[in-house]
View 1: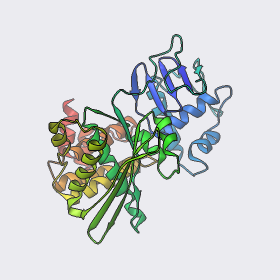
View 2 (view 1 turned 45 degrees about the horizontal axis):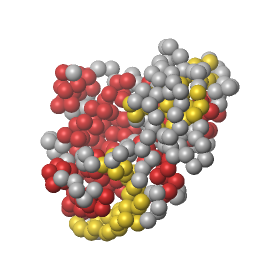
View 3 (view 1 turned 180 degrees about the horizontal axis):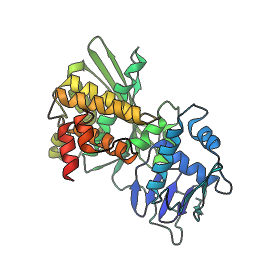
View 4 (view 1 turned 90 degrees about the horizontal axis):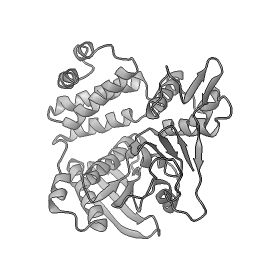
Length: 353
């Protein structure tokens, strides 16, 4: 189902939000919030009802809902002051008040095939080979190593994204399947991809094993499967092997220059990289609040202290600062820099913008 409103289209089959022809990246909770408000637009949705629908009964702080609501409004071009599309009714709840046009698909019709008069450009399948990298399964005995498995999948997403011949689904979309048993064909249908990469990570006694399977989502056939083992210190080489194997299986004509560019290492320090992955786990935490942002900042800062040339970690620290600044948690760049909350290099770059 697609819901068309204002200049936006919310596609629940592919879990995508577009404004005009632009794909808007939103977190899974923000997408679920928008979908729930739109589906229940005929009545006011209370805070308790919304929390139950989005977090499935989990206890979350009030700020979690406020943050997601602000993000939802921003994603669709609305604000808390204007409330053109999402209206807050004091002591009552929220209601989606925008004009909605529903675009349904006929049985057997492919996603993106049904034209809607006056709608924004349709959501068609990409012409390039399209891949969704699912969250890797942590097979280590320590559940705390989940962050490492997630980090492996994200790094492979980043590496594959460097290939012009491929269309890679964003992390926010593919990671909605974390911890869920979903048929690969359904994933391909919902995300609009031809290929799905799934795998696992096991780390013990200084050794690491990464397994991967590339599946044709249309047929369910396994196109490639392999296992890569090595010392934990060679984690980047293992990532490169997985990336090259996937590319070789679905895009054998990829230019050699692209392969070399995709193999660029983010850092030479394994300790810095491990801390960086811990920061990513905090940054993508469901209940993103001031504390988790602070924790993520500290971890990214620690990574840059170990490797002052770790550019990606600086970028993530800047993202944390921008998110915190947008929520009113940080009062000013200079104050935060001198308080040690963000690196001076990042702070100077922010101040120069």
